Image (cartoon, rainbow, N blue to C red; front, side):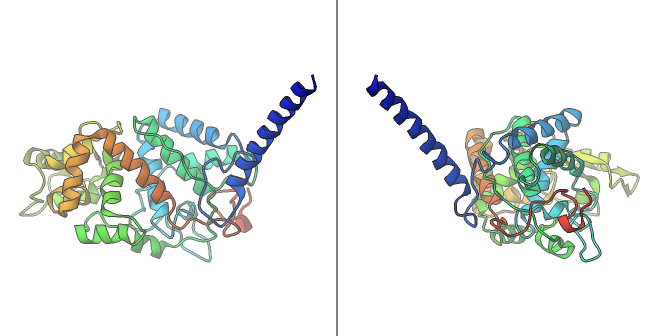
Length: 338
């Protein structure tokens, strides 16, 4: 009897130690790297709440998956993954929403706001807007048929945003390959990351105004396959006038499915944006080889995409006591009435 009691006590003690170990691993070194399971104790339903919000939004509009994924990209490339892209303008700064790469382009803010409101009700003051973006990006990929990965969490939210930095940090869709590679290198990402993360354009749309320069003039972009060029000209023009707000699918074959069809499109001259097509037609030997590699192997693409998304999500996050946990993703706490 005594031995049984001792064994049961020992097992309970080991279980408690294991729980403490998990807690320490997610809370120790607050200025260190991000951690999976960060909200295990402070908001255990955080990821479930975010996932449910994303599911509702994508069920209402399939295009929203690509929009939420893009929000995370545009957040991370401007001063790190800190939720700055979500901030409205204030008397002291111009936010990133109206920067040239974002204006009339990025969307899905209302989805993030609704998720944040639910999280504040469940566990106020714990889950950052930056982390909502990271989880929502992962869930958007999964909902459209792509891979899942363990999202590292623990980001805090910025206290400011910069329209100027957004204009300077987000690559133009008319950039050449050198500028594209340099843009990724500036945030610690490689050519392999560039080609894998560009595969996010397997879902979503772009407005004709973004790529219209490829379609017009005496000599349209010669890297476009002829029939594809004609179809885009018919879609985007009325007479000689560009319908700037008309939407075209980034992946004409499987526009709402996250797969590796994007890379086959590039090889056949059917990349919608210049910065997509140049990876194959005007890229380096590395980018061209990677396009071929991911076109032939969806599993290999998915594995690298997951790795590159985690890497991108670790671009200069605010941790520890830096920044804050916003109550309302649109504004910093000192200005929020939420």
